[in-house]
Length: 115
Length: 115
DNA sequence: TATGGATATGCGGATTATCATATATTAATA
DNA sequence: TATTAATATATGATAATCCGCATATCCATA
Image (cartoon, rainbow over all chains, first blue to last red; front, side, top):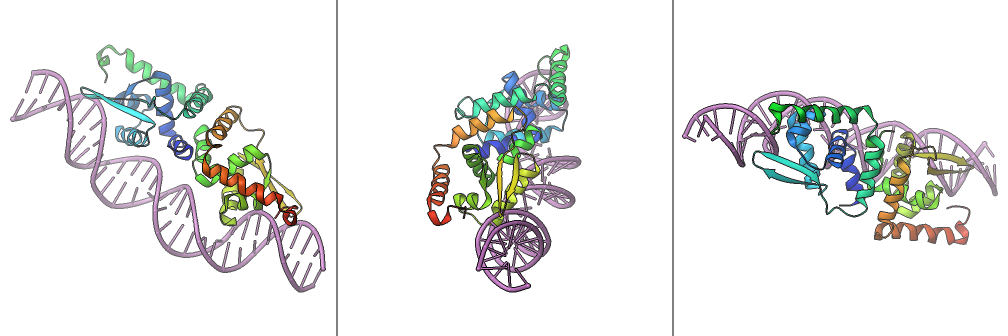
């Protein structure tokens, strides 16, 4: 992946929010991201597919759920940028709201399995 | 400028090449960038205008020439990303060719003023 | 095998990006 | 003032992007 392609991945608000949450949480399934961002599931799914196709994310199915994570074999230059980016937006209200919705969802006992 | 907007600025190959050269050289006029990238002048001009409108670049006219530089009042988080980016592409053949064309142009005596 | 939850994809439409070409503007100078 | 170099903008065509909605696929389990 070239730097320009990498930046294009991060140039969409929805994709950036997904990547930031994954950067912070390590591994999340589609329904967790859907709940966290509070947007329609097909929208999340399509953006995740793009990030996977570009090599920025890896997916792994676990039964019914598909988990996504940042590809650990990304080019070395990509990681510092991801870290800088997370640091830059961690205090944004949008990110904090996303993170909050993720926490709430995860602590609901009846949703503990996932969704 | 939001991080997503910032990344969109860098998501186009032409814009990224301009920003990388400016990151390395500090200040360049339009005709220098046009020569370095070896693309039509209107193409360069339009991309520079976009980067200026987004606040990533500053322009300053000096007589006949308009110089562009990276806006020193950019958000703090932007600079580490720009540095990481330059480090990531400095060894790319495209960047080296751009840089080479810039040097050649600058050393031509009859073009010393600018173009 | 039938059902339901989780995820992915097909499709049409609206918006936006990018480009090449031609032309306008600005500033220096003859 | 006429000319020329440097830069910006207008125009029209093509392509890319993003979205909502509907539907398909995949998997677990009754």
